[in-house]
Image: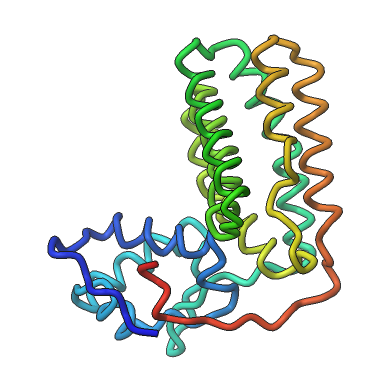
Length: 229
């Protein structure tokens, strides 16, 4: 497999960080893998200094762990941290649902339904990477629509970390989010049925957590050639 050519316009620090985040959310960069500055600099066509700045930014968000004299690694959450993350999401996402119901306009509902169509298309195509990424982005979109910038920022950190946890602990061939559950949540929001929407969200999060094998850590391979995929 050959490395894709770097784009003509060199990406900035935030663009590099976003691309690395996407690679994590699509399980192309697995938990615990070392992020080699030279390889990333070559992949992005930028200097190692710029890569180092992007990795520092991701470290502040918890997606990357920096070790003195060892370098940067994709964060490898423990089973206890996985349980804590889902406990945190169970606290936050009902508030997101309440805010979405209170604040969402017709355009917001259109955006949510368009996202559901994209998820369905990815499932139809059997594109697991896209399914994983879109599943995480659905929850980030809900946070954006909720209108609470603090929660939106928090979910932008929690969703990629959730993808790392799924990469580590999910059973083989288990989808990142069970099919149709996002649809049910959006329809409850559209009906402004707050109790049902919150119940569905909590059931959804419990369903995802229940599929995780938190006592088993699979071996994962990394293919640097896919970073720009």
